Image (cartoon, rainbow, N blue to C red):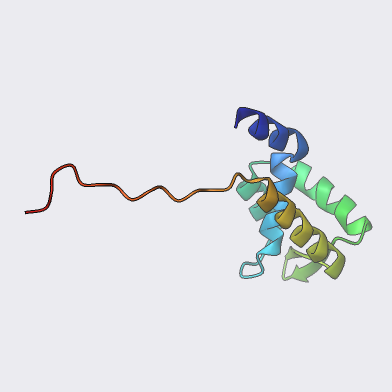
Length: 107
């Protein structure tokens, strides 16, 4: 299991992965500062990374008052869904534990 964990860490950088999966959650409005907080990355790191994603057509910014909300484009959503499926396939299968047998017979 340690080998699978280290492979996952190697393949999936924690901060970008958490940002991509967070942006997939459309029930929340995402701002760069909120994404930085959720991912544990610095605001500068997040804004730089989001700018490159915007240039590649994965995210779009929308001005909301003084702040800029960020969301996935169709291309970004497709990538996030594929990424999530990839992560799901990498997770070890959780097997149901066998039922616990009572020690003493019931009275």
